[in-house]
Figure 1: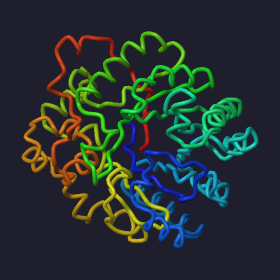
Figure 2: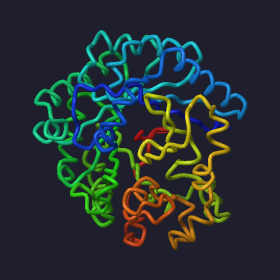
Figure 3: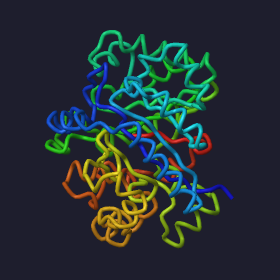
Length: 368
């Protein structure tokens, strides 16, 4: 039987060569980031974190996953030493990068250290991507980074963050991904700035998100033979999948998929502060406390696993099947247990469920 997974998504650094308009680091405020920069986790602390991940997953008979993000992780000077350590400890590791700094030499070095897949961001055609990233070179260098990764034998998953300003460029981003050599493409939704909530001009509502995923089905018919399109919105799968395990989970009212906040892992900032999810910016402790303490004892983690309370708060009897996005609920209402305003469950018609179903690559998801 396949083991369940526990992950750490780690912001290895706040430094970045881009200045993306939708970046968490911009949204969370400069003062916090200056503080993080002065207390960047040392290599010793990082190795201790990895040791804890290994020990905890062995204790719980689970598989460890380590996702290295940023800022831009390639600006972390000891990155290769960290990758040597994860390889030594047989920890599946993935880099989440903007792709602009990936030379062929670095790609080969990643491959040598056990990196078999990267996640790289593209947010539209050349003009739109450069607008979002606020650098004129960002698109061309990202495309080259994808090509270099492919040449080195590394698979590339493209992450497209859907916002009001780029939602019409999804098909072009798919074309660009194919051209550069990526083999998987997924869309994830933008989390609005908490101070603006649903009034954030980039926020996409439930009707718009529903249309994006319906359109993706048509795009899969068009491009599915050239690239794998991830069906990352769990509602499609939960509501019509005939898989016996998922059917039993629905009937017994158990959590099986969807938002993993509180269940699957934690997010660690560059100074060691811990969030329950990278998109849910509530500090619940420090990684030095240990994963067992953080996952089993913190109130917010217990709240996020309280499906009965979530049902009461959301007014949805089916929320335990997908849980919505707790980060978007928090950003728009201030309550991470509230209804996800991007939920499109009530918009789905029986005819939608009869359409071709996009099969996700085994174990493949987008990281936030």
